[in-house]
Image 1 (cartoon, helix red, strand yellow):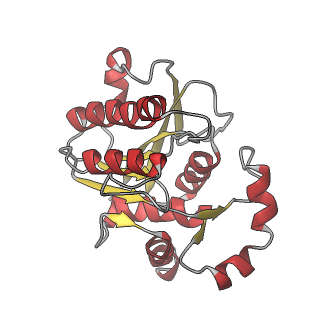
Image 2 (image 1 turned 90 degrees about the horizontal axis):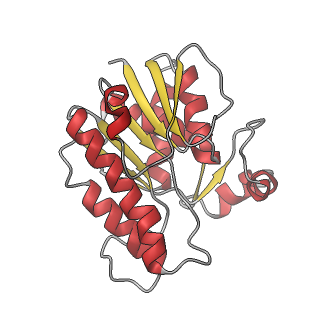
Length: 226
């Protein structure tokens, strides 16, 4: 199956990495980036729409039709935010995009980057984990073909991409050590991108993908020798 993907968050480290993998992947036919500012990524498969109101997509709905995958990599840190504001930016923003896409593309597979430690019960002590859990739970109720919830821990960035966090670059130099000591808490950004594409193309046995699931799913592409 050919993948026609919409990507949110391409100007961040994770989104840029996912776009990088998608543009190289033989099964990805096209990629549409939705962002508030240009990504500075150029490729024959790539189209970009600059859109400033992520709570209202009525003006660009026709541009959003005809896609069968969404890789939603948009997110912010909860540091310095109260729960109301973090909910508005994390939950409300994500659900507004997702409900629009579910209506326009019911055959779509929606892949959401959440985070290791997300609280699916929505009752834990950590505010960000409750809000992420609420977002995951409500995404799972939307009428998509499938929804996959990605919970990476530490992500090793892809070399030479422009939006990698400086701390991630430094810590990434020690990735073999982290992988040995904390094998279930780390993955690579390449793994995240490949796993999203594989989930959209072939599905996966679990809706929630922890680090080990992300690595395992990415490996199915590599094992196929493609």
